[in-house]
Image 1 (cartoon, rainbow, N blue to C red):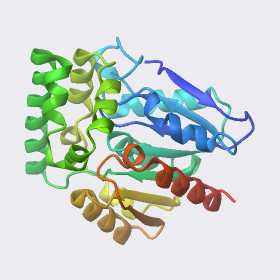
Image 2 (image 1 turned 180 degrees about the vertical axis):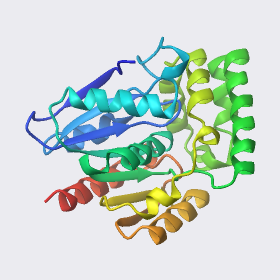
Image 3 (image 1 turned 30 degrees about the horizontal axis):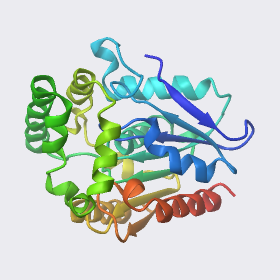
Amino acid sequence: MQLTHSIHGGQRAPLVVFLHGFLGSRADWREATETLRGAYRCLAVDLPGHGGSVGGGDDDYTMQAAATAVIDLIDTCDAASFSLVGYSMGGRLALYLASIYAMRIDAMVIESASPGLRSQAERGERRAADERWAAMLEDRGMAAFLDAWYEQPLFASLAARPELLAHIKAGRMRNDPRELARALHGMSVGNQPPMWDEWQGNHIPSLVVAGESDSKYCAVAREMVGACGAAKIAIVSGAGHNVHEEAPDEYNDLIYAFLKAALK
């Protein structure tokens, strides 16, 4: 599958690739790419089943296929190396890419994501839960799905910010629910082997970001940094799971400073 994308910044500047989360699109990174484009070449992609990256075969909607499609796109940019910024599902994809293409990756920002679920039982439970979510997408459509999705405890910080939540939902409504269901079938964390061993051996300079209100991923971030000597942690106040939307200025300053130090 060819991924729809946007690219900004100087052609000779270091390449930074932005990978959105489930339900998102390349538009989610607009503020981040505006901040970084003066110093970096910013490539924001629509992952399979999202935005304009639709209509593929079933084999296109897997983590492995998404990784191949991202690398194929990067190769059109004439970049021998690149950095990754990934949120949630996009963060898992960044970790997967790092497990295969480590020699090409200069730095990584992993936001609200983990190297996966360790036990088969956990993965089975998550697979079943994601199948239920996919069925809701197909049966009830986007509006009903989004209302239910954002009622999850993971997104509790957005309840106090109705204008931001409405803005996020409006962006999500531009996606096709049937395509999102295919992406959820194929790229569920329940279908992905854990990558904790690979992460422990990671030598790529990495920044692991979590929102202070997201206790689950704050704990994951601390565990990740404890397991990997190449990683640093940033816990962002005033934010929950979706840090780059909830605290964009602090987030963008963080990743700018991290990349500047990592790529010097």
